[in-house]
Each structure stands twice: as C-alpha cells, then as structure tokens.
Image (cartoon, rainbow, N blue to C red):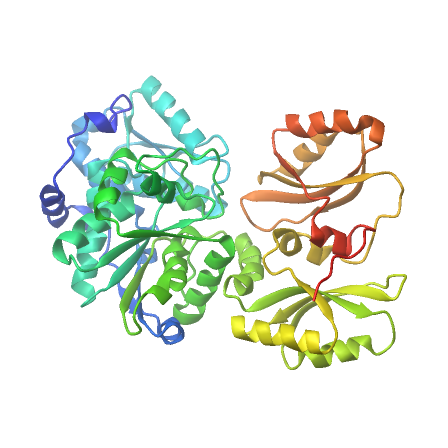
Length: 522
C-alpha cells in the first residue's frame, strides 16, 4: 500500500481466501514457529490448564516480524519504489527493518517520543533510518504519511492491511496444531491486526475455540468500538502498554473483529504488572507491558470458565526497557492483590506501634511511614502483604477488633504514586493551597520544560516527582494561591499543554498532607 492508498482501495478477502493465504505465507523466511509452554503455577492458582504462546522468541522479540514481512513480500521489488516507510511504537518498526534488509530495500521508520530506548536502539542496529516525531503513534503515523508522499515511499501499515493480517494469522494456525481442545485464546489488542489474523484462522479450523481480546483500560479503542458498532476515536490513550496504544482501530481489523471476536476484557496497569511478575516467576519470561496483556486478561477473565478449561495467552513481545522494572515491581503486588495500602489511625502514645503490629499479625510489612503529629492521634501509611482478598478482609477485621480505624487506599492512584513517598509533613502556612496531579510526556528534559512552564506567579509549597521508568512523567504539586488571584490561576491551569487535575479535596491528601480533619473510617 503506497501512501495514497487507503484500506478502502484494497481488495478485502473472504475468510476462506485469508486462510488459504495464511497456509501459503512466506513468514517462515524470517519468523520461527514459536513454542507454547504450560504455566504450572498460574494453572494451579486458577485451576485451569494455562498455556503461553511465546512470540517473544522471534528474532525481534515480537510477533510483528510476521505481518511486516508478509506485507513487504507481497509488495515485491516493483512496489518498493524508493523504499518503504512505516510508523510504529517500536516492534513493527523492527519487523520492517529486518524485512527491508532481507529484501534488499531501504526503510524509514517514524516513532513517537514515548518509544522505549531499547526499541529505538534495535531499529538503529538493523540499519533503518529512524525519525522520532510526536507524543503518540498517531502523531508518528501522520508524519510518516506526509514524508512518504514527498519521498515516494511505500507505506507498510502495522495492522490495517490484509497482507499484515495474513502474516499475524499464522500464529492462529500454529496454535490449533500445538494445543488440543483449546477452549479460549487471549490476544493483546492495539490496532487489531493480531487478533484479526488469529481469529480468522482459528474460527475456521476450531470453531468452538473462543477468541477474547485484551486491552489496557486507558487504551480500549476496540472494546468501545465493538460496543458501539462503529469505530471509535479515543481523545487520548494511556501509553504504559505502548505497543498497543492506538486511538482508533483499523477499518479491516474492526470488520473482522465484529464477526469473529467473542469478547473483550480490559485490564489496569497494576494488573498488567501483576501478569508480568507471574510470567517471570513461572517461565522466566519478561514481557513488555503490551506483551503481557493476554495473560493479564486471562487471569482476570478465568473465573468465567469451568475449572480444568484449556486457555492460552499470546505473549506478543518482550522489548522491555530495563528502567521500567522499578515501576512494574512496585505495582505488581497491587495488580495481583498481594499488597494492601492502608491509612491507619493510631493513638499518639507509647505502645501503639506494638499493638498495631499484633493486629497485623504475621503478615509482612512492605512499607511503614509515620511522623509525630500534635494531638491524640496520628495516621500511619502502611503497606501490608496479603495472600488474597479473603486475607485482606481478615486483616481489616483484625484492625477493627483492635480498635484501629483505617482507610483502604489500595486502589488510590495518588497514594500509590506520591503519598507513600511524602508522608511526614503538613502545610502550616495560612495562604490557601491548591494541590494538583500533573501528567506530561516523559522524555529527556521533560521535567525541566514542565517547571519552566509553571513560571513564578505562585509559590510552590509541595512538589513530588519520581521517574518510574514509565512513558509519562507524573508530579504532585501544591500551589499557594491567594484568594484575589484565584481566577488568574484557574486560567493558568487551563492553558497548560499538559494535564493538570486538582486533588485538593482528595481524602488521601487530607489524611497525610493538609491540616484538614482526618477522614478515617472504620
């Protein structure tokens, strides 16, 4: 497909033609028949037979090599023209670069600023011309289309082309041969090329196998589109699972999904991190966040199956930035519901800590933050290891029976990102204080740029930023805003190029950072 060609100009194949082309695909020139492995611990925990399709075993550590190569082989030497161009969050780019080298043509790749360094370096090493542009895949896509038009380059779409879908569909052919009596397969979904290909293959060969797509809950374009019966354009997407962060699914992939996909499930970033930890512990596999979507969805959805069902998660990629491990490790326990974060009210008198520890029992403390407060009570920020939801409820009962009031902050994003690092100081100045969560693209110099935008009109009375190895920079900032400049401050927040969400009234903020009365409940 050259840059002027849209999916509407492409001949859309029947299911039978798709299957025929998958069976005669050229992908094995560059791709391997990846293995499937039983996941013993996850299987035991879920009381299911859980398999993992190891697409991280490909040469580029991602399934994307299949679709990229199939598309470029179909283009042929005449279709290459002056070379090819692609937009990608990273994995498709590597597939195009490898394919270009195999087919003796040049490749230009446009990636967004949020593309992890490990993927950028791999693209460089493969000999492609790398261009970094924009904050999202959509920005990179638009620029790639414009640049390709100027240079006469053929565009290789990462998901919305029949050739790409054919290449990805070869995974489905392998699955039905490798796993007998497969009840359901869980597939990561971004633009939809992977699930379209797998669904098209499996449904025709094993019609009883259910096809279930998995998306991050902050990038759920396919889920919303299938629910509404039309393609939805999301205003923004989260990019923790950057390989699947697409604002709008493809035309052809949506058409196929409507007919062949049985269900969709969305997962949180914490659940993704929990799945990464589970896969590492069970198989020593270390997927990137998008690569772990399938397993995160399988774990969340597994209660809908009879015990002993045969389930498979596609592990779609493993191009993980090492720096992200810190963030993943912190959130994995929450994602697996193995850590509770509690704000516990204790009497400000000797012996309170010992009594609290007795109430917690033999559970492991993962975090314990306290600072003396004037008055009769203080609030402790505590992280406690729990085995499951039942254990958490037992912990709460024990605290109540010991006359400790508490707030469960396990699901509170402010507490997980910021408050656990800030406990111990309260604002005492009489100037009114406004507290905001600020979200900005994480890249070199981003924090300095952010601080430059704040200016010097209002005093900053609290600032917390921590590099989580994630794609977004997140800061908690408190401004002292005199009443007579409140309207000017409101305008200032609305004009900023980054997200600013006020959390001054948050109960978690009141518990630890302001002088308002504690909102602790039994």
